[in-house]
Image (cartoon, rainbow, N blue to C red; front, side, top):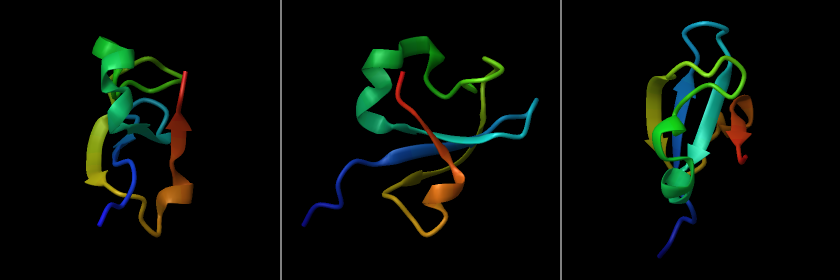
Length: 63
């Protein structure tokens, strides 16, 4: 059984924004993977895994 794509969930230490990156985009983002899309600073790791009940609280970084 598959659960679909997994995500890494983060919180920005500067602006407080919650965001997530799909794990299959790790190669695409390279060194900027896990960085806040607004501030550009490394996010604080919260959790990883499939979409959960709080998934809508996190902005999905796609570009």
